[in-house]
Length: 445
Ligand code: ATP
Ligand code: MG
Image (cartoon, rainbow, N blue to C red; front, side):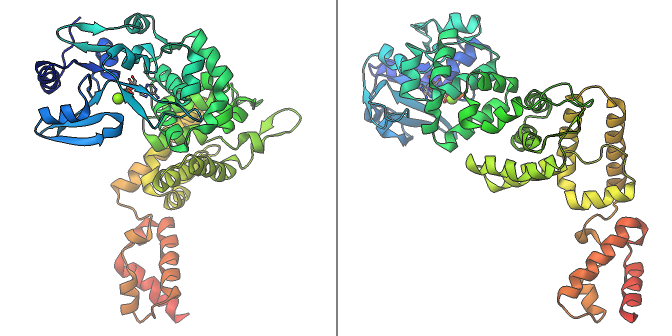
């Protein structure tokens, strides 16, 4: 098999070989190339020590010398070149901080997590595949290199990586590997929130976020996202629903575009259902779950060390996800809602709403979809007619009010809000003369 790698990657390999060293592309890029996917980056592994690598190339960056990694630059393009290594002692189920270099490629392959990630390639030798990675790629299996229990004991992040790759590639996790995950999921307690965030986000942003249910079944979410376990254990006896909260949630995640805030909002939109559930003797209800969900979602995201912008956006989407169903609102009411929601949220709201409707039972589905269409038409009309929905869009400013003789202070803001309320009711009023007229009338009284 021939892999077409970028010319510069090949140049690095040839330069190293001509200097008497071994060199291969390795890991994710070999896996992706065999799968006919365009790799994100091309990593190189070599028997040369970091200082020897640096001597051979004009421009290098010391990316992680202690781990053996040098980045070789060609223009803006960088290639990570890492010396064959074996990992030192592991502590607390986390990656070791010391490594030893080796001159043996197979030793380097042994430390890698899964068979599909433990392949190397160069043009002269073709694929080097000691652990049958190609076979596992063909049969769609994620399998640890070596003994799964030992490998997860060394580094528990691999548990999440297994689930994440299974979601990205739509592969099954091998039975022995699964069994070890089940037994050792607890080790994830030692893994940093940042690394859990990265893997969970990749899983959610994949083509198969429903693998989150595998994570639940293997006892993994119990450790890193117990809120999801509560969702999986909350049935919805209600005509609008056909699935428990967790199953419904996964369908919503899968149906929204691959955007970080959107996929997390989908995961967390019903996070408060388990704690707001009531039953009237016949049906389950979840009154106020969106409001309560805002705090719970923020709690999860803060725990996982998310940035404030993402937390803020997810909170707003959780809050608004239930808006607009039941009786379809009038456009006046919608303008007021849009003012509170923020125009920047509306498009994402429509994605969540559509996915949410489609992941419910088909009870009143046509009406719900129709409501959503009406709201989208309202929005289009508001944008097309440039109707005002924020203070900023008023045809009058605080400056104008001061020119009319008002004193700077809280009255200014209150007046602008009063004008906005009127304009939200009656968009035609958003005209400087008309608004000045209203202000003058008000000042007389
Ligand atoms: P991606 O497409 O997400 O980048 P990748 O396989 O390239 O996937 P990286 O995290 O970039 O994943 O790691 C590169 C390679 O390093 C992997 O293919 C694997 O061989 C090895 N590796 C990464 N993390 C671990 C780990 N925790 N334990 C063992 N080997 C690992
Ligand atoms: Mg990679």
